[in-house]
Length: 412
Image 1 (cartoon, helix red, strand yellow):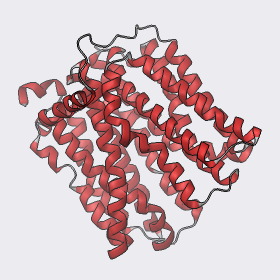
Image 2 (tube, rainbow, N blue to C red):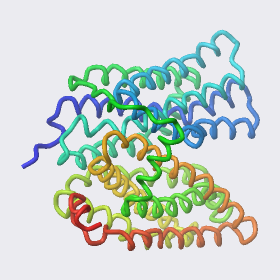
Image 3 (cartoon, rainbow, N blue to C red):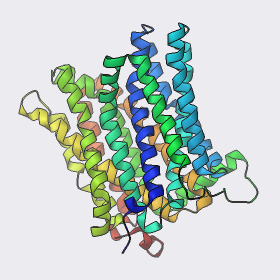
Image 4 (cartoon, helix red, strand yellow):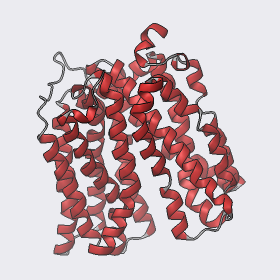
């Protein structure tokens, strides 16, 4: 019987490093724009650009980062990227204290911190197989998902509270210290940081192509990608319209809107807590398939949200779909970590990250266009109908026939 992953001291150090990293990253999503507004009196367009720059690096550098990570020691990449985030974020309160902070400097810090986060995320998903045994991967990914979802849920609230108590610039000090704590916990891991695979290095574009070709040739990875792109396009559209929908169409107060927008985090935390149990009871592949299909009909509740008791529809949909996304993510990452050759894992993970992050702004644009011509509620109906059928590509993969992913080679 496989022992629990929490009995692995090095995994506990890795998990604790995630608490500092993920919580800090989610606090900074609130703190950076608030520094711009409160300290620099930034205009709305500047604040929007600042927020966008925090994720732009995923689109620009996601694929090359996979090639570079495959050429380096993964834990070292995470430590360097965390240290870079610490130094970058610490410059903002220092510059504010000296009276030299500018919006241009904040743009640069937001983008460069996003670059560091790209490398951290790719190395993170690639590193776990060298830290725990293969049977423990699903359990480990579930525990990491609890931290990610919990940080996404708590980060904005903690960030807002810290800004109110100590001010926006000082809040970034706390965020930077979270990155520094992550460096220290990663550095305390005893398991040797495996060197990259030896051999002749491919040119960058050929290396990127190798990762994309592997995704395309693997029937399950290809359909995972197709299903996830459809899902993220619809989610991106809904995220872009949610505040407008709840404020103008439904007529809710800002406080209630904030609570509804945070509600999805509870689904992610629940999925992380249950992921290891479900994986053992019904199999990781079956858990992944059911997590995509069973919650899908709940998407149709969201456009029916009203200001009366039906306001709960928005929360129910958010919790159900976040639960779905978190469990599906655990399953997909476990499959990649189990089946993809180690020398390609960084590039394959980066390919998925780029597809996922690239789909979200596309969905926001699509949702805006539909809402402009047909109305916000109609746009949400279109998007949520798309979310309901997002599992269809997986019908053409081996997934519905599998219990565990170690059956894949025999079924493909």
